[in-house]
Amino acid sequence: MPTPSAHLHLPLLRNGPAPLPFPVPAPAARSRSSELAGLPARRDRVWDLSPNLHCSVVGTCLTTAELRQLFAKLNDPDARTASDHTLHGRAVRAAGQKDVAGKLLNKLLDKRHEGPVKRFAKARTTAEVRALWREALERGDIPGAYWAVLTHPATDQGLVQEVFGEVHMLSHLVGMSNRADIARLRHLEQELGGRDEKIARQEARLQQMAAEREALARRVEELEHARHNAAARPLQVGDGEDPAPVLKRRLTDEQARSAVLAERLAAQEQVIARQDDKMLRLKEDVAALGSELASLEAALAGPDEDASETAEGAPDLQGRRLLYVGGRPKQVEQLRALARRFGGELLSHDGGIEDNVALLPGLLSQSDIAFFPVDCVSHHAAGQVKRLCRETDKPFLPLRSASLASFVAAIGRLDGALATP
Image (cartoon, rainbow, N blue to C red):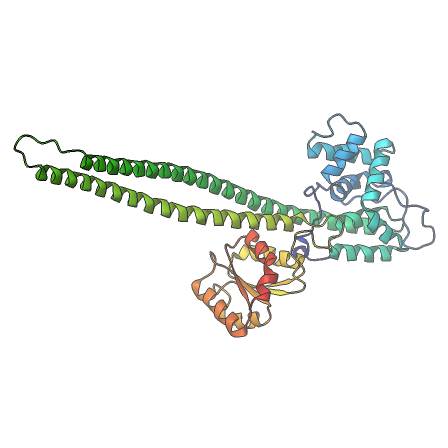
């Protein structure tokens, strides 16, 4: 049986882990032979399977969207509004009935997993079926292979118990991984929402300051105009009064007022310049978060039919080796699983906390590129990575943060980084 870490990234249950019963269910009522002699003329139908298998078949092999379409065809009045759990329960009940609903459900399963069913149809013995199951398990092609194994004429009781137990345990592993990814996505969405609100407040403040600056500019213009008019008007002085001191006093007052307004205007312009810089940085952060979130969503979407193919929009490492220095120790296995999923291999070093820094040159010599999250690595370790990469003429990519999203986004830019020494 594959190690659990080899399957943390597999799109096993597209609706989340289905609840699986214990003890391990008995096989179908008819006996299954591991040899060609005595094989039934056809595969099992869903209602031929043990009722204890129906829950795992529905939860593993079909999506909630497919169940909604099925019950819509059956004119179920709340097929579009019923909860996922309700639809699952109805499908499990329908699986045990040889009626219209059961036949449509069986037809949907055969059509949905036509490829794996045809591939397993070439097997003539229990050993051959088990070998095909092992291959599918290694590729992560669980839903189709599970349906093909359970309904194959050569599948015996031992093989049913074996595949059921493996699917049950994988569902736990995938459920834990999905919950962690969903929590991280929600955190990113909340962080983006907070950034958007902050930018909106900054933009409102900038608009207010711009209005104040325009008002000040108009006031300065009015004062200049008033001074010009005052200079043009004949000076009203009393009989025998010297006009020079009066003009000088008025000029001094206007100059003092202009100086005060100029200082206020300069201060406001400095504040606006700082706010402009701050808003630009916030927009850059939001753009980076949005790009990382999009990369993570594309990576988590997974393939629909064949798990050996990379999902559209997901990167392809093409067998490259990556070195990850620093980061959070609890995330290393998840990063390693993502690298395997994208067709590569991840080597790691904690930056000198427990791992010896002297190991870095050897690890880098085995790698094509080095990564380190700038928010979760020591200055010494980051400097060592940069120096070693320059000495060995290998590229390195600083990551914005130690999150999975930053790692996935950086992998998406890997071709450009490897093209630039």
